[in-house]
Every structure is written in C-alpha cells, then in structure tokens.
Length: 419
Image 1: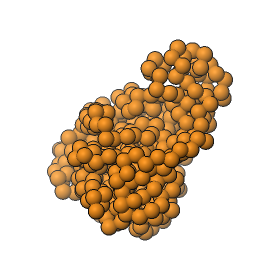
Image 2 (image 1 turned 120 degrees about the horizontal axis):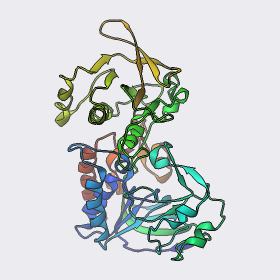
Image 3 (image 1 turned 30 degrees about the vertical axis):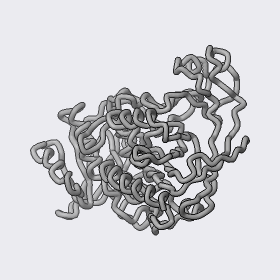
Image 4 (image 1 turned 135 degrees about the vertical axis):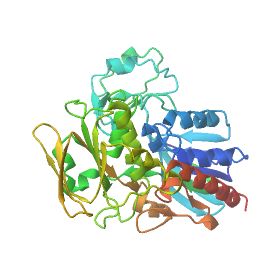
C-alpha cells in the first residue's frame, strides 16, 4: 500500500458518497466557490439512481439527470472525485478535520479507451452486482452502460491473473500490480451522503425468496425493466425467461416490522405503482395483484395511483402476506388474509415482486467516525460540528426530497467551513 499525506483545499468540504445526494451537495458547494472532495466506494458515481429504470417525479431514465450532473462535475475544477474509496479514519474537530481515505486498486489506468478487447479475452465470470446477480460479467468489466468515470475495472476476487487482458490491451491500460493508496485530506466539514441498501430479502423467511426464481425484489424489477439491464429491458421471469402473465406486488416486505425494519421506507408503495406502469407497457392484459398494509402515496404523488382505478386487471388486497409457495410450473402462490373481508386469499402468479425497504448504508458503522446515529442507523446531523447528513443517509426519501435536503446540507457545510 502506498501512503501519502496531503492537505489540498484545507477548509474545503468532503462529501462521502457519490449518489444523487452526494452529487447534489458537492455541486451546490463547488459552484459557490468551495473546494469539494467526493469519496465513493463504487467504481462509478450515481448510486442507487443509476440502477433504476425510471425515477420520480417525471419518470425519467437515470441518464437524464445523472449525465447533466456528471458534465457539471467534469467541468468544475473545484471538485475532485475518488472512486473505489472509503473513509478509514476521521480526526480533528469542526473547521479542521483530518480524514484518512483509502482507494482500492482498479487495475485499469487512465489509458483505457473502453474498446472492450479485454472483456472479450477474459475467461473468468463474476456475478453482476449492479444487476443484483441476475446475470454475470467478466472479471474485467464496465460497471454499466452510463458509468462515470467510463473506465473498466477488475474484480480482484474473480480474476485469476492469467494475463490475457494485458496481452490484448493495445493501450497499456491494465496494471496488475496496482496497490491500495492511502491519503489524508484536510477539510472543514463533512457531508455524509452514504445512501441506502435494499433490505436483504433472504432474511424474510416466510416469503421464501430462495425457494423460487419467480420471487424477486423491487430493485431487481427495476433492472429487468431497464434497457441496460440483464434482459435488455424486457420483463422476463428469471430462470426460464417466461413472459409473465400475472404479477403480485407484496408491500412492506421487511418494513414496519419489529423483526426487520421498524419504520416505513416511504417510497415502496410508489415504487410498486411505478412498476405496474412498466408491466402495462409490456403486458397490457397481465393480471396484477397488490398486497398491502396501507397504500402510502405522499404529497405530490397522491394522484398517481388514480390511474389504476379503471384498470380491471389491477386488484388491491389489504392484507399482509403470510407465505409464498413455489409451484411446479415455475410460478408461485401468494397466501394472505384479506383484512377487510377476513377471507383467506391464495393468488397464483408468474412473478412475485417484494417491495423491500430502504436500509441506511452507514448503519452502526457511522459511529466509528464520530457520527450520531438514530436507533435505525440513520445519521443525525450535527451542523455545529460540521458533520451533516444528506439524502437517504438522513432518512428514507425519494429523489426529489433527497436533492432538496442535500442542497440544505451543502449550505450547512459551507457555513461550517467559514466559521
């Protein structure tokens, strides 16, 4: 590991996380003259928004908003980006923090042109985490079609170091001897925009996601519907690629449950309603059943569900799902009790989508860096200390709300740096 000490932009702002919240905070701060450093653990920027097919409020593809922000970052000399990097240590106090960061080796340098010759030569496969394991990539891969930076990366755990990628690369872009790099930044304030993770649906034992490939998460559904996803945007059942004729959406899969996530994840109901529009675009006659505890369409989204009132093939059942049973034909049977009628419901469908909740990515690990966390693992801002939470690191929220509170976080960070 190489180690260097630096104090670039003393008095600047560190943004931890390069998703939509981190990008918003970084740009707002930099465009009023602040030096900004973005630290992102993934090899690309964009966070969870990059994995969506469409997002609210306009149901735009992620490239719509992200590419504009990427261009603004590229053109702003006050912003420095450190992908594949994590915060290792924070010391100091408000106005003068020393933050040690460590960058993992990418094994691909800036000579990379994205020609794809290395991928064609690579013999090793890896599970594609960007697509939630729905397909594979080679050990050397491009993170996704709109990745920024648009540069390949090698998964060290999947690579057997055969050297075939080095042999075919005409640009000397591959460096198999790259080592981790550590450096220390001097900053006045830190914006924590560490984002969220989909709740692990394998923990939902009664819903048995491991029993059938016909049980997927809502984020997997986003990838199935996305043009750059594993099926080129066609919603097909994993495993046998059947075109589903019936769907079940199971709400609050892990949320509002003292055994999993105690809170409402805010956007899950809206996400499922949005995904029904994906179904309608591809399968106009498909049967859709939504199992819910309460349908929450907050604020400006209140009218969104009205579009389904006249759709005779969309059926809403108020009742919590107790069990999902795998069927021999590849589909599943969803079992629930209708809370209104008291009847037991058994609905056989080709594909079941679990609306898994939003779990803060920082969780208890944030306390290691001196952050104050609530009982659910969200970060509590302390503007007086220059420790500010943004986006879904602060609370479960949609993109618009995340952008708004990230703009506020940037203002607080600037004020802290000028004290």
